Image 1 (cartoon, rainbow, N blue to C red):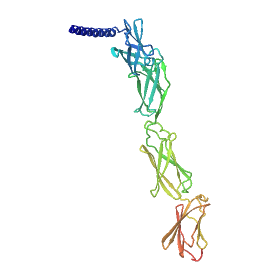
Image 2 (image 1 turned 60 degrees about the vertical axis):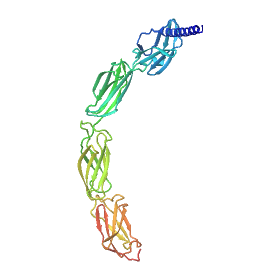
Image 3 (image 1 turned 135 degrees about the vertical axis):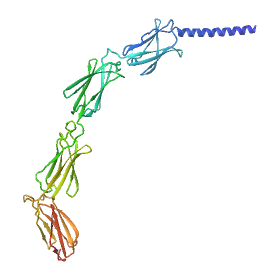
Image 4 (image 1 turned 90 degrees about the vertical axis):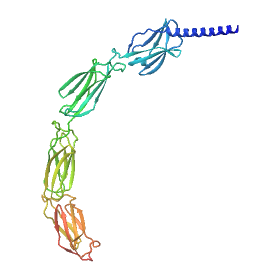
Length: 412
């Protein structure tokens, strides 16, 4: 009897398990996909529907989108189980994968595509660069156009885009098709310098122009010259150095602001420098006249790029002799008045140097600047105690040597 009861109990359990499995399978198998389209237009409502003979418990649709992942709750009505994609997802193109989940188990899956909306107004983003290139035809700027629909989705592949560019008197229009979301074109420079204006158009929507500057290429060798009021070494006037119009290999005037260095070598091989920047291709530098006769050799350079001819500039002395007088028992020396080439007083600030010599040895060198053509020196007894000295006076490149001067050691 007990054995019969035990066998009956086992049969009951098996039948219950079979019934539950059959019921679960029935609930999952009655969901049939009724949405057949594989393509949806961005911005439109995207609804995924399933046919169902009865309401399934807790159906959910798991969505994988380029914007992210989400789990949708369905609605059941008139034998249809519907899932509506959120607007933030339905506006963006791309491939969408979905998985239908019932009781935490995937019972169906599929994919569909969201394509750009042709009925919205096209928008275009343009990128042009670099913003400047050199003339000559070897360098180029690239125009990249990114046309999109009204929801900022890239348009479909092979959409034609007009890329227009204007340079001087030439206008060029090229048709490029989108690939990998963009249309692009390399625009090479010409031999002349100037501006390249570029714009694009797609589906009758035009953009504003963007520009790239075509600058002159590197400079070629040039010549230099000079101007001055006179050729005297007065230490006062200015010699102006200037270049010819500096151009590149393609006859373009070099850009304003090109730096030119003028290197000057004096007669005793001292190096001087002055600089100028180009305006309309010409650079100028200024050079103060020396305060003594000299011979300058000048050459201009655009560092590492171009150079000029050598230029020689000679400066004549403004005097060949000058007056000097001793006072106060030879303790005071007055040099001057110094006169220039028109017998006018020399400018203030002319240097006068006096070497004090005792027994053929220079014991001191003094220097003063002129004021109203005169320089004054004083030799105090505290410093110069010997009974006799000789003086060598130099100014404006001319040197004169005095006779030996004697001193009373008790006279200040």
